[in-house]
Image (cartoon, rainbow, N blue to C red):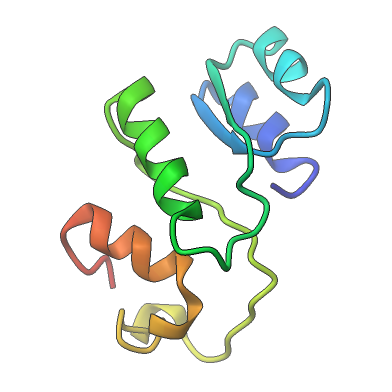
Length: 106
C-alpha cells in the first residue's frame, strides 16, 4: 500500500489486509486500533493467485471487504466512472475485485 494510506485507514477504523507488509507496519496499525491481517508472498501481483490470497484472507478474517487498494504499478486513462470490467481485463487485480463482488461496480 502507499505509505500513508494504511495509517489513515486505521485511523478511520478500517480493518486491513496487507500483502507483504514492511516490518513493524502491522504493529503500528494495530496501535491505531485496526485489526490487521498480513498475507506473505503477495508482492508479485502478476501471479494468478496473488489477489485471490488477499481476497480469501479478507473473507476469512473479516467476512469480506468493502473496498480495496491494490497498487499494481499499472495505469490507465479515461473516466473511471465509464470504465467496464472488460476494459480492465488486462489489469488483473481490478477484474478479480469485480469478480469477487459478483457484480460490475461501474
